[in-house]
Amino acid sequence: MRKLLVSLLIMMLFSVSLTGCGEPHTEGIVIEADQNSVLVAGNLSTDRYKELKRESASDGDIFEAVKQEVRDTGGAIDLVDFTYEDANQFAAGDEVIVWIKGGIAESFPGQGDARKISLNE
Image (tube, rainbow, N blue to C red; front, side, top):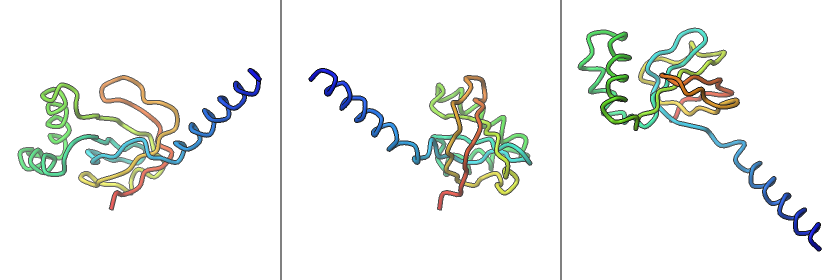
């Protein structure tokens, strides 16, 4: 009886873990994109991004402005640099959904590998 309960419990846990496999890890706004990476700010509103963009003199300054926003909000904004094969199809200001491979390194900004990135329409 105990083996049956343990087996059922393991099967239930396994099925629950499989359910989440297709769900995106995060959503956010592209801050920078180049050939192999996309820098994404999660938990940053579109309106606040536009304000920061207006206040910034250049595209390089928007990165600094977002970094300062992360500090000012006590880390409420997630800033992650994702390695992604087709990163050059995205531009600063795009709203995206990201599925990751593995975890995110705890650096600043965070670093991770994206399995898939798509525009959030």
